[in-house]
Image (spheres, rainbow, N blue to C red):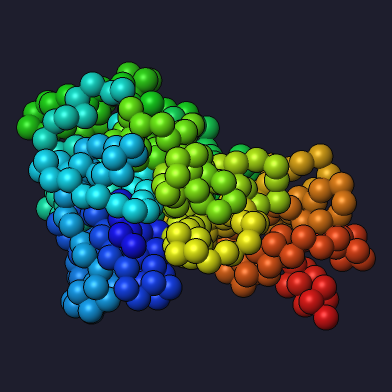
Length: 412
């Protein structure tokens, strides 16, 4: 059997290893769009701060890991997939044939429609090459503008502050991390970052990037101009699927997959940030661009590709845990509520916040947490258990901080 994997991130690497475990004799080719050894994008901020070397970002530390597992790694981009001929065309013109194909191509940064983003000194923070460019310009005392305060932006924010730059954050929405925090939580994160020395501008859009007095000049919609030695763009990502144009593979905001990670095309599977699959605890389908989902997708897809059966996929839980300059926040599931009861407790002075959401069957379906690290696992466990909370619902409505007690009580 000839397996080909497009993508060498967490989903692709775990899939390749699982394929090898389940099919010792099969041929496995993993196509990476970058020359570096497969690495974790989530480790890039630690590289930026100098806490780890570039090698510390690698998903597998042994230099011969892929060779020793007979996994061929090709460092080329994919330009086209032909599902009729079962071939993948690379950017250098070479063609790779497959019996079964896994698309684990991840996501790619969104470039907002702002004039001037092609100027020298403007970078995304998505690849190791980007990280090297940022390290070169983000020196102590330099002026840096960070466009975007979503999940990725906030991870980069901490790294930039650690480098001692004068940081201005420009976020179009009315709060930080708007996709994982409500107004209360997002505003508390903003206040925390301001206290740490960042100038955070929410409800603000960059309208152009120009040059003035030997520096970049970022104009925002208020008319103010912010000087910068470096502009970092972190305004979101989208599924990396452009190379599938012209195929019969069904896509929306990601590649549509069934409960066994198959696409609508025979012998083609998808996993990770590019795949739109079942969402846990809802009737919906979604792209969850988070590493835990990617690794889970990669493993299950590979088992199914080798003829195993993991059963119907229960769905991925929307879950984000974020450390923003030392403030840990987390969001789980349907934190915006589904028509059941909800409760929250707020301590702005000490940057602590907890919000819980229940459905009409008294099951915990969503939560927000800020300033707590001791209850993250308990919240996740209670949501994934899909159990009515019983007497613990009333206790949590009275004091949502008793989540650990509830977890223990319901586990007995």
